[in-house]
Length: 196
Image 1: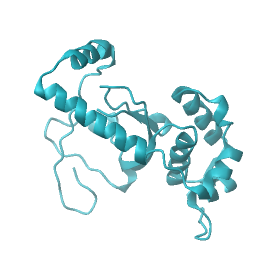
Image 2: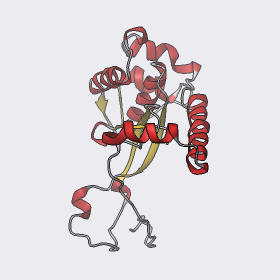
Image 3: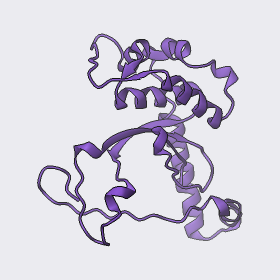
């Protein structure tokens, strides 16, 4: 892979089978086992869950009012699915515009939510804060979006070019389901994560 600066770096990406179909079996086995490995796993997951609940629910005071004005009432949203639907519906009414500039005098997210136009970082920030407004842990993530089309002709171990055109950011929200792996839903600019 080429990060775009002319120097080649190698990264390996490994996909694991989707485990949700075996969720109950995995949970039962982890809960019943007393092996040192599973005990250590449960402790690590508990530590990560604590971290997520401590840091991924933070909501700046500077944008609480504009979140309440922009997104449906938090009392009416009870599940992460309802929150995601409300967030996507609200953000879909806003304009994508890479030419906007932000005032340093006002909060980045509040600027976007008031203006109702911006680019990917604005939409992602707003989605993260909206999930937190609904009481759902969320975080901002950025990286490169490598599509199936970019890799369709690549052979194992072969380099592919990655440029700034593949730079992307997305919101991740936490399902807090024990033992579940990261689920990517990037077509909506939002994906879920869980402590595992």
